[in-house]
Image (cartoon, rainbow, N blue to C red; front, top):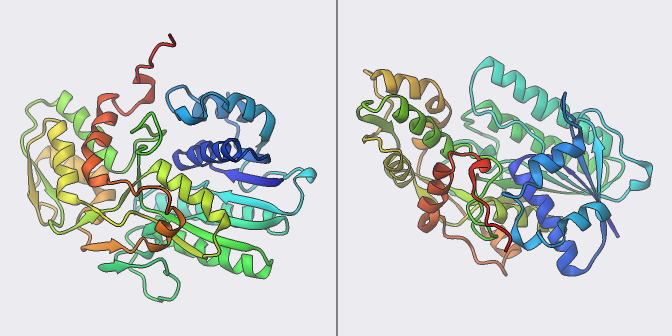
Length: 377
């Protein structure tokens, strides 16, 4: 019987990894003990957070709805603590399968962002590795497909044979730093390690209910910003959006990502990009989002110099984090290893579904509390 430890389950990918692990046990008629490390909040215990933030009616996939409460009781154990301060119970043994997802996603380039990323994503993670290194048989460390930095052309799964990187922010730089650290720790302590690298994550496209996500961030943030602004300033005028007309963004549904991460436990690969073989053209993403917001746009090759008040506000906030991705050079991910790992699952077509994926979040105002649940008949 496997013993599993998962961090970051209250996050978007982490919650779906837990859903996938429970479904795996059910569909294969297997048993396992799944430890989830959750930080308590001032007014909320770790257990309450698991119920309130992960197993909400709106988020739970249909495929686990009939049995998840029984399986939670039977197989899931909560460890209350932080990644740099927790105790693994003695009975967990010394052959853990560890899924480490807890991290800060801050794409800003400020000194404050650097300190946050260095503390949470590096120092705390280092402390986490120290706590688990003697009790682990397999570690799946979730990084990002963007830890390679800015690059044109084909991107393979092997990031570590190169020595020069052009990082866009501290988030990318520190993810690469931790990747190198974790491989070194795995080698020194004789356990297997796979670095799993999802690209930009969207709502579900495989499991029902579709399009749902526990977080609506990155490209969703553009729509959230302009939806709010359009309501406040109906006469806001045309917005000039800087992007590379040749470029694209690799957007992967969260359920596809979770399936890849769970299966990575069986993989002997050290590096695995969880990406799709096709990018969504950046101009299509921006046009779809702003049309839905009712905002008139002009696509331009670089950030405008003589900005309007609204443009100034956008490029100073959301735009400051996302601009480097929208003007990024044309590239594509090989996505060969992930297709071999998920050969029995049809690769989602994000370009064909992007509009539905975004419109769903827009229509619920980026808040799952606004999802109308079907009554139980």
